[in-house]
Image: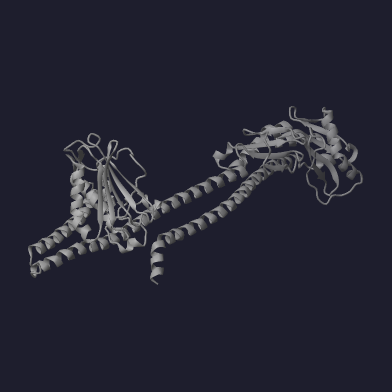
Length: 565
């Protein structure tokens, strides 16, 4: 049960991330499907709008010519039965019909059968046509009606018809019947082609626009009218030569002509595809931004959880670290109080133990206080010229009692440090850094009781090395060992208490001296930590107080940021 709880605690952030990711993926999938459907619907809706507009234009043209024909051609049958066709001039003049090239009357009754008169608005009068082509077109269009009249057939109902066999003389005919439903004549009009192109079409095109398009969309529309041969006879807009997106033929006259409509810049499919790409791109971008934000939040939360766990471990470990020297001090203090030290040698021995444990306790407390100062940016160092060898030897003497009673031996080698000049250092800080390295070597010795300390000169650097034969550190861990609270992930680490601050403080001290700390280690073969400090003249000036200084150029192998501490 505890394992399940621990697993859940470790992965709760990832579970939360998945809980947010899955709805986001579902939402994007639904958005994609909706945009696909919207794209198709948009194309169909736009196409329907274009078709409806063309239908409205065609209806407007048909309404114009049917209305004009009904007003002009509904003449009285008496004009034919009473042989008064010349009176048609007054009738036509009164109607004032526009859009006609000629108005005419053709008798199909009695002695005047076949008589054809054209209305001349200039006189006005009914005259014999002077346009032979127009006259021939009228007789061709009237031929079926003349046959019907000759057979003396009666018509139950009559309606206007259009004859377009002559493309230049398109004729609208209205059969005229008497009271006995006998066909007595024809009234007709020959359509004026120029008037159709210059007046009727522009008016119909413009009149229908507001019902289907906004004013801003008008500029993107191109309307064309093509004849039976495909030649453009009328055009509006910027691009009449492109393929039409919608077509519609006229239904009353000019039935061999057709209307075409297209958008000037993009067609409906291109527009829908561009709109789909834009919306989908924005959706994906939003999804990426959300995922990025979630990932950053997850990373920050995970880091805070790890840091919180590290701090919890830190409190637990420090409590143990504080209790151990305090217990020793208390025990030896009670021995002295109870008079167990009966000789001066025993008093000195107990006092030495108390002093050693007090130093150990002070070092731990100093680490904690120094870390607090480092975190708040208030840590400072006092640089003075000092003999580094003396600092190292003094630090080793401090550890002597503890190491002797633990069975450890220290091999100090300073043979390569002869003639080593004084360096500008903070002696207490360097001693603290060396103490932390020695403390690590003791804790992680894994039964090996020998520690090597070496002081040497390497070109312009003073090198202090601490070598142990303990558990070692893997390459992956070597990149993390100077992180605060970090401790190497080995089985031994759980049995060894520590604050997790030692090497973090070592790193800060060495960087403040413009130096470098390096590590060479292999699992099971021990570790060597080296503090590389610049020789006098390469470091900070003597007597200067400084916070954390910028690190010097890398003088050696890969630096390790360790958590042995």
